[in-house]
Image 1: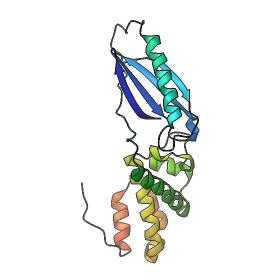
Image 2: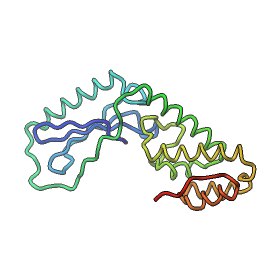
Image 3: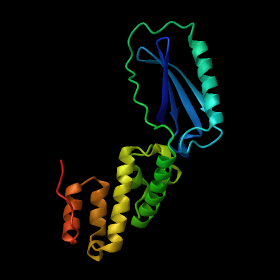
Image 4: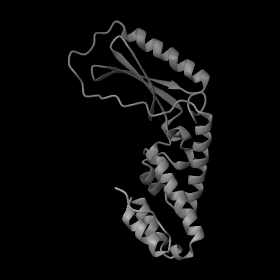
Length: 203
């Protein structure tokens, strides 16, 4: 799940998480944290798949559930010791129709590229860092993190290079394997050997 929002009140941090794909279930997770301890969690069923974020009605349901958690925790004493839970940053951007359109296009293009390259579901999961059980076909655009976008762009670029450079096709499996394991040096060498000009290496 990805962190969507957080809110602090009276020494308690409340976090809201959304699923990354259908496999994680169509529900949001609300979590309350005090002094490094998770003191409460609550699931909220979502009416709609959060493709780019929760529907307005689902946001209202989450707000109502949050109010209930705040009320329930109001009379509880905070933990005596410091815990080990470290809240992470918000991972989902504010709604932006232009970004939504670009993410949707990237997701569709990456699906086509993975199919054309014959990348297995397990390889896709490794390349994009998807949660167990989560597949590219049911990934929500909101879950396209910078790391995942980078992997998608690489697959799209390799597909196009293979389509336009016959010399590279003979080394298809080598360059594909190098891309999947993040071996930039081998990818660069294979491209140059196929007559494809690449820029200077960067650290």
